[in-house]
Length: 427
Image (cartoon, rainbow, N blue to C red; front, side, top):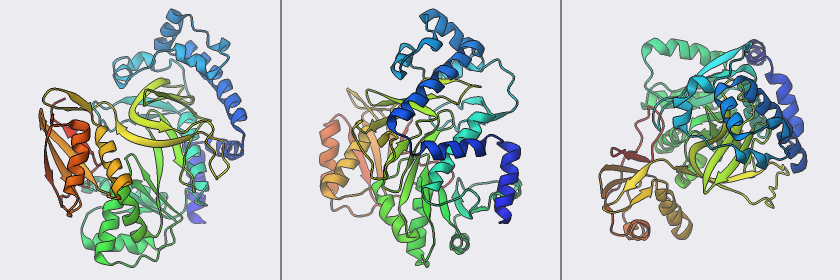
């Protein structure tokens, strides 16, 4: 009860529009696809009219294209506008920002894992409504944001920052590990027995799950939700996390600049947050328009991930009409350079997916390229019995254009941030 009161008080101060919007999202959760489309079109008009008035960058684009947002008749009309890249957000950052005096904005900065960090401001409605969409996803698992929870988001935190983070964690009824030793893990597990959910980097949840299983710690938890975010969830993660924490790891997909894009329902499907974002698929690339981003408009943005959308006829057993995102296959921007050709880095996704589907072989990997035509491939699992199957799959996609140096039984994670499945020094 105390933490619910703290949460409600803090939210009304920081995110005053969250509660009303959360109630609205609980209603639209049961809307038909046609109703959601109608809402999306109305919001698109309102959003684009605002952008046309206050964003110098987009005002120029609209003028050049004779694009009149008040006249759009379909979401498809947005395709008249150009697709923008991360480089555009960086280069035209100041002009993209809206020249409007918002009551409250929040400074945001991306991690920069795929390049230069992006800095921008989010208006309060954008921040609040994005959080409301996330908490609606929590409600699918009977979880409340004030429930006691465990959290993984980086380990190497300075002593100076540790006290401030511990205070913030207390106010949010959460706890985390600050080091990677067994005593710290044991203390974390003891607290976890009283927690309702667990969240954070997918790879970190997996790494701690391995330790819990290796140490033989009791796994009598009462977790209603185990949420992995910001990273791809490898097939091997599922069995390790299930054994350690007694539940399936589910996915939340989005980014700081795009907002929450999709949340996995209890039936295992990732439903697109249609009330807040428009998602397109352009030759496998995800293109996102964030209808909340009035302070820093995100319109037809190539996020940099390779995805697969479900067919319009797909029906989830949960009954929701929101479209489904079937797969997130990895980053599109990085290239693997062979002796003669180059390949998208997400090719590795298909290599290891085929091993899992066709041979029931789940391997966690990290590929590193320091020299053209050569790749170091680290495999976490120690069993080399199926090396010939891996070699066959690599040959299928890369032929003899790349020489692979494969090492098994490797530690992949440094435990201070995201796990990168492909690292290159050639870009």
